[in-house]
Image 1 (tube, one colour):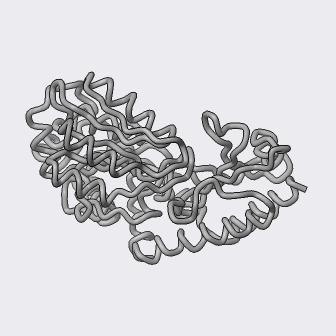
Image 2: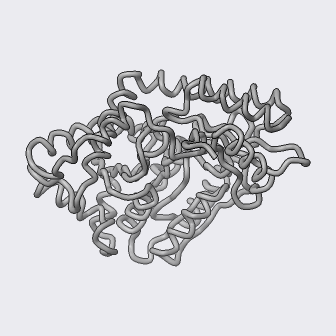
Image 3: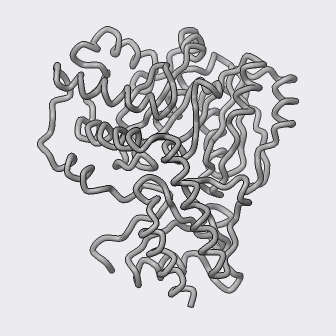
Length: 363
């Protein structure tokens, strides 16, 4: 075993030295003038990455907390939810939505296939859902789902759109306001290059209208509670709970770096390295699971030859080379490996190291 495995999984990612240095500094108090400046700056930088002018909250917890907060806060009593599902995390959205309403319709297609927008259009016309939920990057298959046409349909039909962008924000373009995303969730440990621990949630004006009339469900994940503290206590304590001050400061630094690079340049870097990785691994005899036109810029899945088992390949890479990649999920567990290339992972020297090690293991 190696002292430290190089994390090339679909998150969490390797941390760069300047982020680690912030995490090693003395702890800040999570209230007061100095803290409020840091918190507000970090929120503003993160809004620019979301490409939104609307409210954004930094909620201590995993990305799933943010999804739960959106569904629990915006779902009307006995509201109608429509979930788009083509992988493991789409299925999880369905399960989470059913916790808040019995009226959940699912448009499901086989894993690895794009969402059926014609079926969505028909379903929206017939059932008139209050909220549509989808995943932008379906990490289980590494497919990038099209958000823009779904947002257009939702605006036409008066439904809210909630997007799980946990594995895509910062690696794939997602202009939240322009594409009509009412509730968007991301997390720190993926393309934003920080440790796990903050759920990032943006909320549109249309979403607030729904939150105001929805039944109260819980307190910590209530977006209404978070807005109230931001408004009433924002001058010294802009959140309802003890904030993870070190992680917020790390996010401030990471978001600044991403914005200094420029969103377009950052997205292009991820696309270029995705394409480079696909070509290199195809040269080793493995096929990408997802066609190029639907492939995620943050993580890629490859199908192994029938004689190879994914758990064995993952284990050999870790034991012989100190590199940790992901295996498949569900029915893909035995046949698929997944390589992360988001945020700090999206650097050619790291991907070259992965490819060299994979060539050695595949022999």
